[in-house]
Amino acid sequence: MEDELSFSDIYGGRLALQRRYYSPSCREFCLSCPRLSLRSLTAVTCSVWLAAYGLFSLCENSMILSAAIFITLIGLLGYLHFVKIDQETLLIIDSLGIQMTSSYASGKESTTFIEMGKVKDVIINEAIYMKVIYYLCILLNDPMEPNGISQVVPVFQRGRKRDRELETSISCLLHSPYCVCARNQKCQAPAGLLD
Image 1 (cartoon, one colour):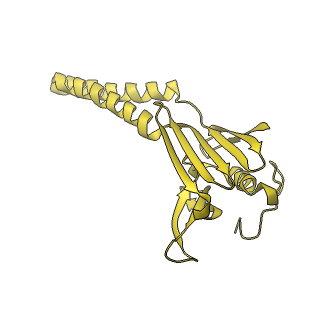
Image 2 (image 1 turned 120 degrees about the vertical axis):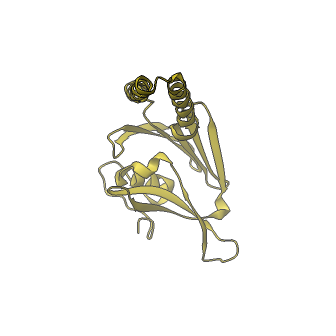
Image 3 (image 1 turned 60 degrees about the vertical axis):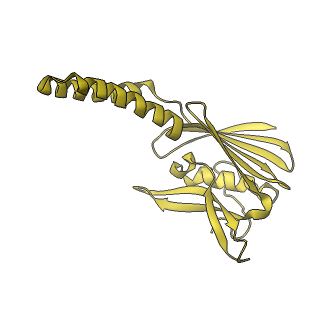
């Protein structure tokens, strides 16, 4: 079974959440982010090159133009390879663990696997980023202290800039045997999940 929900981030960008259920104990969530805008890429490139041309006309040094082209290309490649995420996938197999995969605009993929025995809880964390934002996190057990938390792992990197509605929906879906949550409906989550 597969369905898709559409949300927007705090900047107004469209985010699409696809949910796939392979079996009652195996489900996948795929968050697709907007592609790189040609308009914004052109604007940044033109502004850097115009500033370089202005400096060239003052200094009459051709190294400035070469440096501007080089810096723009290196910056763009770095942005596409390390920053711009096109798609994030969360695969949950109840008895095995959670696999998180991020696909970058350059084609690079980053995969992280967390064993289910290490997962203490799934929470919705909030932060202040010019306004209050919410993001989904996994709390990992501390092997030395039974009641302690060793690490807080954010689930979606793009998720740090989304609204609470999407986070609540994903959190409810992670705990789907206990919770029925649909868009524009109140979520009945297990006690302590949304506190």
